[in-house]
Image (cartoon, rainbow, N blue to C red):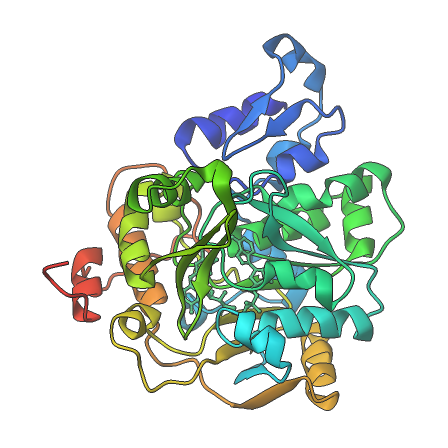
Length: 404
Ligand SMILES: Cc1cc2nc3c(=O)[nH]c(=O)nc-3n(C[C@H](O)[C@H](O)[C@H](O)COP(=O)(O)OP(=O)(O)OC[C@H]3O[C@@H](n4cnc5c(N)ncnc54)[C@H](O)[C@@H]3O)c2cc1C
């Protein structure tokens, strides 16, 4: 076993999710992922991997190992009815009562509020969230937060793939005696759960020290080239002059806004950015079988079922999020946030259509019917048989102006 296995089963098949956990767990520090693909530092060092297979063991690229993680977390596997949403206790809608978090958030700030609540309720030391690269400010990067001021860099969805789980690296290397909470995308949560399941000292560390995990739903992500192209080609800006990129800024559901070093803001409508991003997706993202991994303590998605349509025709729907509470710890944290007056909430079912979920279901079904390499589904052998609606058609049904 070695990096070769990762290469053969995942990298050469375009199944890397760019989560970055392979670099974080490599005991010899010979794997580096700088943008979207992990590399071995030197081919001559390949042999040094020896018996180690940690990078492959934690990789969610080909096999997210959902059934195994579900047995560990819930003591059962999901049923066919639970195919897309996974196992959960209850779902509620809501928004943050903190005005600053609410205004800066993607869909009401429930994720940010629950991370801060978890810090207090579970006595966590560090929160690992999605931030920005301090030098190249248009690139995403993991950020470590210990308080509200620090977590504010992570508000809003970053429609950009970056190796978020490199944020765990210093703690894993030191086997640090700290209590961590982390938010991530579904594939990143799958990687964390695979790490926690390992019969290895690093798995034992992860079980003991990663104590709260949330996820945000993901229809598909976009490589950093998507963001770079919008900045360069659509806004005619030099990325070096960029101070801040926001994907959901301003009036709900927000727009793609780039602030330059003279504090001038440049805007692209969210729905137009979503369309442009279609050209910058990886095979792994396009063929992904999970909208939510179902393995987080709590999962979050937009309360508005169609932010694409809301971006074209501002809707009557108020900014709000949906919370899918799955575990006892998730329930404890959300109750803490409610009891401490941090979250406004009401009962809300998750039956209604969500455009991101519909796009994902249709894309996955398309790939399942092709003869190509795709990731393992959450229910072994179970394939969706619904009639496929093309992505373009779904966007048009959603109200996309045909001439734009
Ligand atoms: C690529 C992508 C696709 C999405 N697809 C859908 C969809 O199909 N349907 C849907 O309903 N919702 C989708 N979402 C989620 C939605 O946009 C909101 O992020 C979610 O509702 C949480 O909103 P909030 O106000 O609670 O989050 P905020 O309080 O604004 O906090 C945002 C949270 O998301 C995390 N985060 C943001 N970007 C990333 C990233 N790139 N990698 C890792 N973590 C990140 C931050 O760390 C933070 O914890 C998507 C998000 C992303 C990034």
